[in-house]
Image (cartoon, rainbow, N blue to C red; front, side, top):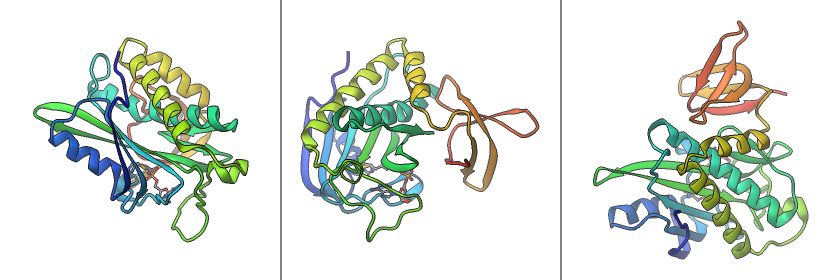
Length: 248
Ligand code: BT5
C-alpha cells in the first residue's frame, strides 16, 4: 500500500505547487510527498490557463510514481480518481452535494468548486505523475478574476469557514484510497465510483479539442477514463482529452 502525504512541503507562497513538485522530482524525492501553499502567484490550469489561487483556498500537489495496473493508457484514470477524491472530501467536510464533470472538475449546480491539473514526466527513465488539486474553500471567487465558467467555493455555498487542515487530511485519505484501489486490481471500482458521481453521463455535450469541436451524447467512460460519445449518426467516438461543456 502506498502512503501519501508522509512528507509535506508547506509554503506561504509559491508560483505553482505543480512546478515546485516537478523540481522536487528532479532532485530525487520519493513518491507520496505533498506540496502545499497558502497562495499561488502563478497557479496553472490545463492548457496553459490560469488558476486563481488567493489565500483561503486549498492548493496542493501530490507526487506519484504509479505502478501495478496504473501504467500506460490506464494513467488516464488518475485525473478522474483525483476529481472523485476532491468531491468526496468536500462532501465529508461541508455536507454539500457535489458532482464531477468529465474529466475532473468538481461542480455544485454547474459551478466549479475544484479543478485538477495532472501532469506526467519521465525522470531517470521512470514515469512520475504530479496531481495538482485546487479547491475553493474560504476564498471569495467571484470578484476581480477572469473566469470562463462560474466558480463557487465552500464558504459561498455554506456561509461557513472550513478548517483547511481538516479538509487537507480528508483529501489525502480519499486520494490514498482511490490510488491504492486503482493500483491493485480494483480500477473498475474507481471508475464505477466516478460514474456514480458523474454529472456528464447521459447528457449532450460539446467537447472542445485543440483545433476542433465535437457534439454528442456522453454515454460512458472506458477502462482508461476516456469519454465515450454517441454521435448523431449513432456511431461512438472515444475522447481521450478535451474540454467538456454540458449542453442542457
Ligand atoms: C483546472 O484547469 O481546473 C486545473 C486547476 C488546477 C489547480 C491546481 S492548484 C494546485 C496545483 N498547482 C497549480 O499550479 N495548479 C494546480 P482548467 O480546467 O483549465 O480550468 C481553468 C479555468 O477555470 C480558467 O480558465 C478559469 O476560467 C477557471 N478558474 C480559474 N481559477 C479558478 C478558481 N479558483 N475556481 C474556479 N475556476 C477557476
